[in-house]
Image (cartoon, rainbow, N blue to C red; front, side, top):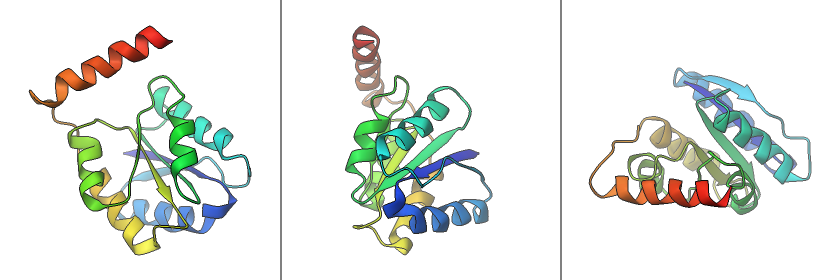
Length: 146
């Protein structure tokens, strides 16, 4: 799987750790940068890469993860989940078909972030009676809004 990574300068060290870890897990990575202090630009670049099919999934980071998750979700076709625990990492895929995740470098340590990345990448969306109607409604709303 090709995974795109991007962050603001606050999260550049964590991005480096996670990109290396993704490679260790057998994935390819694309670096969307970490120099721009205006995180919306980097988050949107990654989100456009995901929504446009340049990369399979995306990982964005800032201090808390909140700003980049909001930014990424402005792009039609990008579905970014802010993760803080392992259960969310699994459910981001299994229940929500999230094609991106956001992490906060100032609240999630490297080892925890590696676990979240692992659990997220190891899972693939499985349509179910519970999730499918919810995601269909989300798609309907997105199509109406754009």
